[in-house]
Length: 199
Image 1 (cartoon, rainbow, N blue to C red):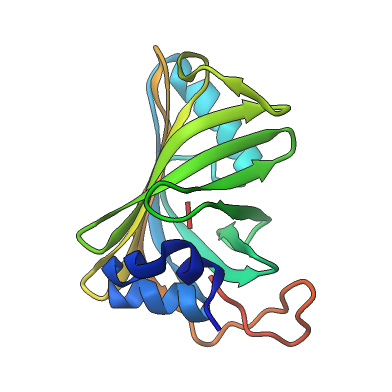
Image 2: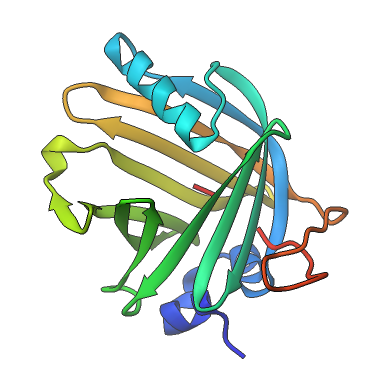
């Protein structure tokens, strides 16, 4: 059976690097070191407040990140854990199909519409729209997320940056992660299932 990611991409799924294909076909857990940074001036305060809400460390520098991805019930599920602390979970719902379709990431009353570009085998999110309580928010009034996952020396490179109009960079983290085959976790509704691994 096709996974939710394969179905959304269609023929375009083959454009992804084979390691990214495998990750989104079977799921997995990745872990490694990433570097966290913030902007300057007022952007530091805003960025650290945003970081605390997203479970990202509020101190710049090197931190450990574990990411789990799996597809379930027609959605793509991501779980991120920094330094072994609290987990931040995202659910992405597919709409349409690649390349004109998108994914919707929801967090409370906020939802992001994210398209995907495949560049050199890597998955690059395109932040198209932001909605608050279902109402579109102009780009000039809300931060924009730039995120990607690609393969570098057989490792998974993750990169996330959040920028705001007038303030510039608020928050960013990036680094290379490796498969962690020793970790298993039980996914909701899937007792005993192996963990599957982002932003």
